[in-house]
Image (tube, rainbow, N blue to C red; front, side, top):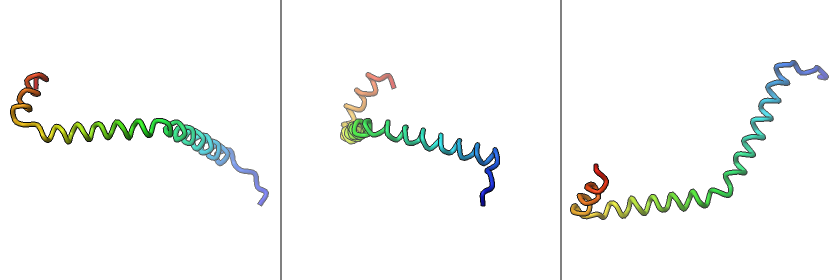
Length: 68
């Protein structure tokens, strides 16, 4: 059982280790922005809910201003 690992196996283990380290770094970087992302999604949901309550005249005015 004291066989030395082949070059390919060492390379695979090295690459997997680097990948795991980078993924952990990435995940740590996401932690502080999670609340901001959640808040942005809440604003988008509020905008969609409000848009659904527009009257036909308001929709026409909105389309006229946007050029759509």
